[in-house]
Image 1 (cartoon, rainbow, N blue to C red):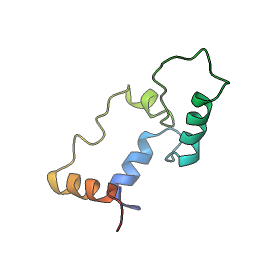
Image 2 (tube, rainbow, N blue to C red):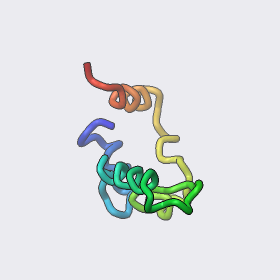
Image 3 (tube, rainbow, N blue to C red):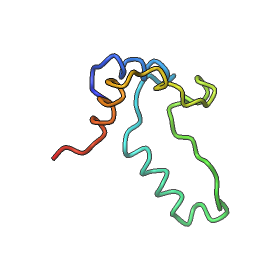
Image 4 (tube, rainbow, N blue to C red):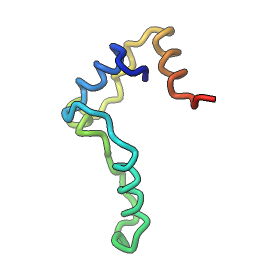
Amino acid sequence: MPTGSEMEKQARRRIPSRRFGEHWELTNLVAYLMSDASPYMTGDLVTIDGAEALFSGQQFSGFAHLDRAAAKELMASLKPKR
């Protein structure tokens, strides 16, 4: 999502920690799940969202209000830069 955009500000307001996750936070989870430290864990849904699910009631509705142009802008920002 475009840095500094209104969309980014709204997304941050929905997250109780008021920040987006960092890549290392996800990779730490993956390392644990792949390690010998988690042999009894055979499957689960692990929510890693800065507590947004608690705030929003686990509804992915934050982007439902976007108009077509804003949705296209968001999708374009997700594509890797060449």
